[in-house]
Image 1: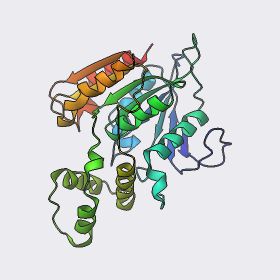
Image 2: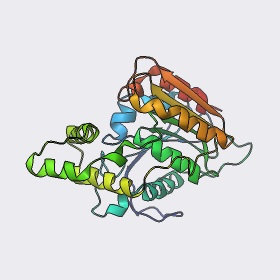
Image 3: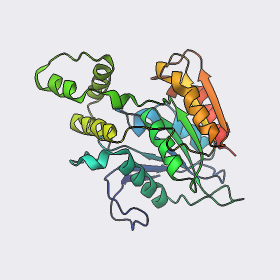
Length: 275
């Protein structure tokens, strides 16, 4: 397994960025000869929490897939940059492009299933995967979106209220803001300054899924009890209008938080990406 911070020791060919993001490349025991899979985790999580602890990485490796994981800025084992620009979705997409290129992903070539890249995103990672697919049509082969939403909950976050609360304990009226801040505070590895920087940067580049929809095949997966998933049909119709194949799966009894551990989700993703 290749592991470590994404540093300038490698000769960059695409964006030339040095984001200090923690990247791991997990090799399969027996290679199925298919393109690598990039996993993008959710807000206030990490590759370890979303993908390793829930069994995704080993499941994909067992299916013969090479897996690329990355911790988003300020998350997990990645750096927490001081500048706001490092947290913008457009900068993160550029960093992801650099990372997968350095890890050996190559543009799609007809008749060669080892070329291209499959992407699985979860929650915030789904938003990033949607935009990454829309901007990288020559590279991305198929996308799986877990817990997707056409509206970004981080965009409605009340930054001023969160900052007041952190400064002097003033209660936060907005339920969504309160919940997201609590989630960010749960993990000792989270850098709160970085979490708030990411939210501020996302507010500056709001999610507009209709503006740029991916046209490669998509699988959208949500828990039956995930309120955010009410907008999943909107995303499906936006992608279908682009002429792409769209499949959806609703996992019974699961919420936005725990659908990631579902065996049904993993099985559907493996099958969908195994072509």
